[in-house]
Amino acid sequence: MDKELEKKALEYHSKERAGKMETTPTKAFDSVDDLSLAYTPGVAAPVKEINAERWRAYRYTNKGNLVAVVSNGSAVLGVGNVGAVASKPVMEGKAMLFKVLADIDAFDIELSEEDPDKLVTTIQALAPTFGAINLEDIKAPECFYIEERLRKLLDIPVLHDDQHGTAIVITAALMNACEVTGKNIADIKIVICGAGAAGISTARMLKSIGAEKGNIIMVDSKGVISSSRADLNSLKRELAIETPLTTLSQAITNADVFIGVSRGNLLTDTDLETMADNPIIFALANPTPEVEYSHALRIRPDAIIATGRTDKPNQINNSLIFPYLFRGAMDTLSTTINTQMQLAAVKAIARIAREPADKEIEKKYGKKLTFGQEYLLPKMGDKRLLTEVSSAVAQAAMDSGVARRGIASFSEYRNGLLSRVDNSNFFSRERIRHRSTTRNHSGCEERKCNM
Image 1 (cartoon, rainbow, N blue to C red):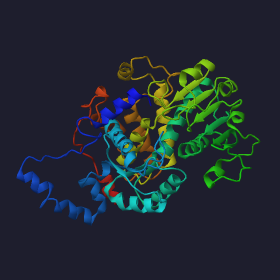
Image 2: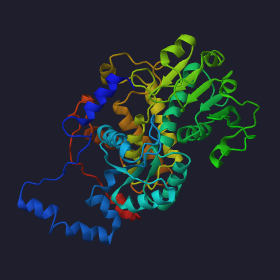
Image 3: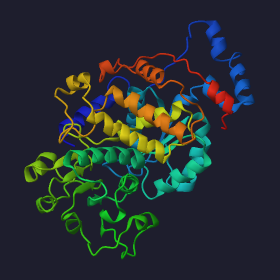
Image 4: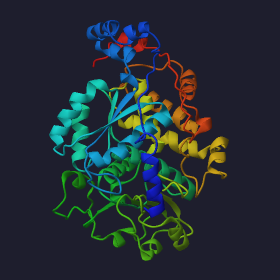
């Protein structure tokens, strides 16, 4: 990060109220009568209702619109293991995006604990407060174990976004890049550099859309993950292949796709030159990508290139998915976010980019957006992400049997989503419309949600 940006970021976080989030009441509090309803003695009424049927917490509290963003700071993007307190700005930022992009309330929770079993126990104890759990910046391989255990223990959605959110956006981008280049996902040679949470989950998701395991070459800090290596954990062994290749440079020769979730300035000019025709290069290390966008394009003008940066075309960022993935899951009171819901999100994001771009978004970004080499994914703030991705996720939840509340009219649902968040004034501090939203809980009542 350059010094000027660093200075601006510190000023942004410290001016006025420190940090990026606050809590605000959603009910009137103008009189003694209001006080008697909000607290004692009136608050006893919803307590009794919830005690009688625990699912009623979704009717009388904010549980159904509240996400816990939980981290121990052991794998903060770009800076590593900084611990719980230092991870707080990232978790606050995540909570901010939940609210701004999908009107989901979120509390950031930073835990000073690296023992995975103790983390599971602590998060399980916190779960009654929330409608969903977003795990964030927890190092691999512990993150896989923690998510798996919590999914078995809890009946609310639990998602490690560094795994699944990143994988969903990469997969949507790759589907569209294949469309642009005429490549077939089943035939292409894919190199994934970085075998942490994002890399492993991306490989798994690419296989689920038709990529062949033998065509996916994983590379970690010690080289190609081959079945001949004796130093692999169970997660890496799952993705190991029979190959004589040992280095990244060997692996990338004739590769159609490079996906980097590793470290900056890793790819050489020779690496780029030896890739196949019309290569697809996703250099996603932050803040410095594996190869700089403009430099890669000079070496390979036939390439489709994406990074994680906002100042370059084709930004691949999980903010394009996690607010809407959770929105659809929570609005259906889903017990989990399963593979069907994730794949529905992949297809919805990819489809949006292929359609004519939103005119307001073009105006915000100051350029014409046409599906192709420089526009693989919709831009942050595109209102269709909220309506179409959330709807696709909700439909998949219902179809796969994990929804405890159905959506009778998706037309009304989409309109309701748009009324929650004002996308016409994106990037403005006053853009969120604080409105109370009436919801139909009858579907949940009939099914007696188990909480």
